[in-house]
Picture 1 (tube, rainbow, N blue to C red):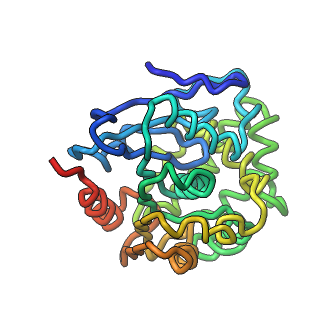
Picture 2: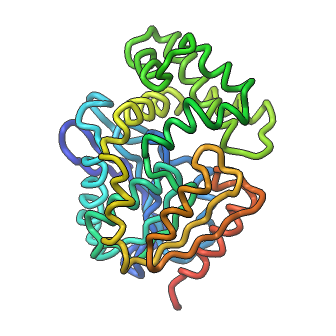
Picture 3: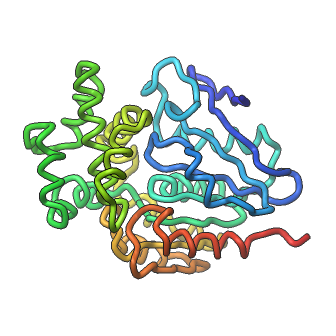
Length: 302
């Protein structure tokens, strides 16, 4: 397996699909933080002739680390993308990411606009306080009250569920960590699909990636992504020369449609596609079809 040593005890796992010298490659920026790249993620790129780079961010997936949370901040994740681009000697990247992957893609583009050919994003998440409050306290709980009660029961109805979950996931017993992670991931899965059955929810809740993802998400969200308020929206003028395609589920209850609309209004070269009957996940039928259509238009001329 190829790894990139980025220092501070972290080595990033990455994979290449296709010849990255043939055209500006797609860089898949996975969500979470902490989700890692799954085989299901790769379905979005199946059959494309443009090369794809997959990589696992710090502390998750197949990436290696000495301590998961040490030297693991948004600033370092931004620089990891740049280190990977330089190591692979790729002049420009096409960033493809959803949810936290959209956040990190936008942040990298703000730092290194000259290295970004374009972006394809979905489930827009700007990691603002109001977005975190919507999902973990006052918003999505109104749509799935029975599931939200299961979610907060794990932390005894704590005033700040994110901080309480982080405490359990970082300092609890192994049994407490597994239970907390299953509950955290189930709440996310409930809101990722319009029509998730119980088998699907259980599969997500019991996945091996549950503990690292729940730990990293609660860690990052406890610190509001290590970002100042409205950071991305305030710096949108720096993105005006980059083409951006956004696919957004109308019924996304993790990252509400209004966030994508606010971002699109501030970008000069942005096309916003709203899937009328889709929620958060890229695998939702209408989201998947729209994303495939956008990616197909980016195929290199042969």
